[in-house]
Amino acid sequence: MKLRVVIDTNVLVGAALSAGGGSNREVLRRCFRGDAQPVVGVALFAEYESVFLRGAAMAKCPLSGQERQAFLEAFLSVCEWVKVYFLWRPNLPDEADNHLVELATAGAAGTIVTRNVRDLVRGELNFPGLQILTPAQFLKKHPNP
Image (cartoon, rainbow, N blue to C red; front, side, top):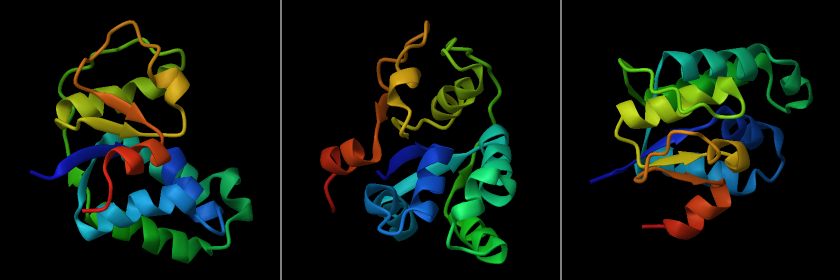
C-alpha cells in the first residue's frame, strides 16, 4: 500500500525557492514517482494557490508565474482529492494549521510533511497514528524504495 501523505505548503514553496531544493524537492519527487500518495482538500488547495501563485513570498522564486502554475498543476495531478467532512479542531497554536491534521485524518494519511513540526505537534487533540515529520525526517524514515 502506498504511503499517504499531506504535503504542507511550506514544503512546496521551499522546493521552488531553493536552488538546490534538497529534501523538499526529494519529497515531491517521490510523490511524482508514485512512491508516496499526496492528499489535498479544499483548504490546502486554497493555501497552495494563495501562497504559491500569488504570494509575496514567491517574489524571489526563479520560476515565472506561468512556470509556477504549471508546476502546481503537475503536483495536483498526482494528488488525491479528499473531502473533509468532520472538523476535528486539534487546537494548534496557529489556527490556520488545523486543516492539515483534519485533512490527514479524513484522507487516512499517516504523515504530514512540514517544516513547521514544532507547532503541529502541540495540539490539544492528538492522533496517535499520525506522524509530523520534516522533509529530512520523512526521507530518513522512508528511504528510497
